[in-house]
Amino acid sequence: MSNILVQPTMQQVAKRLKRNSMSKQRHLAAIMITDIVGDTALMGRNEAKAMDFKRQSRLIQKRLVKEFEGKWFKEMGDGAVCTFSSASDAVYCALEIQEHLQKHDLQLSIGIHLGEVLTEDGDIYGDSIKIASRLQVISEPGGIYISNSVQKAIRGQSDIQAVYLGELHLKNVANGVKTYALRGNGLPPVINGAAK
Image (cartoon, rainbow, N blue to C red; front, side):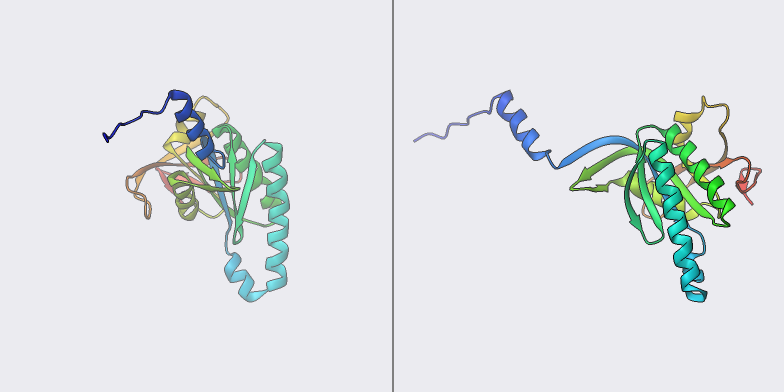
């Protein structure tokens, strides 16, 4: 008996790929990650006030994410992971969130990155999530840090201003990430390429 190698047809390959990817989907997205500044310390001092801040922040963020046609993926502690189909929608949403939360004496740190993500069974994965998360962690209180991919996508928007901070080495990210801080009314000042 001889070993005969049978090659699948293109149709069979396509069916297998479709079946394997039914619960998985890769796509390009602008990822926005937010976190309330000082929430852990406030929780230790005044739990009721911290919980009220979380509720207010969540309501404002969810409303604005929906308004800018984003998707609220999940909450992480006192922050959130959201995606948008365009970088400009993510940036405009982040700016609006910061403006609204300042009126309530709340501060967020926000990171935004544009890259490929994998969605599976209602959750989201990928290096792009990690980069957005690391940008959020290093963002100034009340600030918004964006990656080079976001900057390239929004640079034609004359009403959005960003200052280059340099190529930063982020925790658990293999390559340096060219990072920008958004500036404008109500955002932390950026002087000589460094947030102050």
